[in-house]
Amino acid sequence: MSRVCQAIGEEFTAWSARRLDALELEYLFLDASMFKMHPGARAEPVLAAWGITTDGAPVFVALTAGGSESTDAWGDFLDELRARGLRPPLLVISDGAAGLIAAAETALPRSLRQRCLIHRCRNVLAKVPAEAQAEIREAYWALFDTDDLIAAGAAPGPGLVAAVQGRIDAFAAQYARVFPAAVKCLLADRQQLTSYLRFPIGHHRRIRHSNFIERTFGETRSAFANQGRAVGAPSSSICVASASRLHQFYLADRKAKFRSGGCYYHHCQLVPRGLTCRMAQSSKRRRWEWGSSWPGRRGSSELP
Image (tube, rainbow, N blue to C red; front, side, top):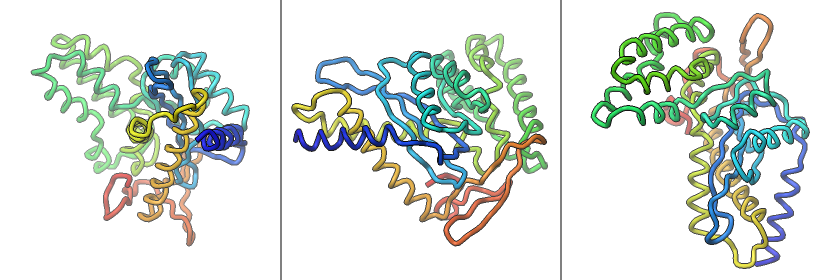
């Protein structure tokens, strides 16, 4: 068992030190999850970064024990990625953790930031009585239902952003007197709720929340709880290395699903006149044009 732990640790150390110069990301998902490193000890955060490359492939970027979710912890994590050659992505997607947001804005100032809509919905509903939550939940998600706007000819960009921000204003006007705390919560950091609307329509439902990484964390936690920590494993580094192996397993499975469904994100570029995209096809990759629906499996509009 000690040899297995040593092999996992060495593999993780090498993986954690690899260069990232060749990695070109459009979307970077950042999140942390709590793991118990030692029996009887309190859970500690593990910081993770996943991404979607310009070729449309998911990639597991980094994982480390953070000690906390402070600005310093996240700042050190992101500074290390930059030192290893990671270039700024077009969009960073995360929850509303203050330390994470502050660090991302400092380390990746040129990247747009998207606040996870699912987390924000939970925050808003937590400030509403139980009997009114169904109404507020429906009204909240209606803000970001842009099918009618797109059918009317709206394209990704400032116009679509302005339209949804106008809906947020209307929501605030309707509920400010009844649920002032919920409205205040919604309006905080409101511009980062609509950053995803500047990107291709076919990507919207997948880049407006951080479930891409949260779901993998959940699967990893479940497997980790069933497996437990090996007797005699020397430190938390083995726990993190084991979590890394599990993350990579789920990533391999997800990559297979991406490719079996022919699903690839569109390649985007930020240029002086705004966001433009180009379409290219080859025998190995397919990239989708502006406004195309997400191919998915069996015609689904969701990622596999």
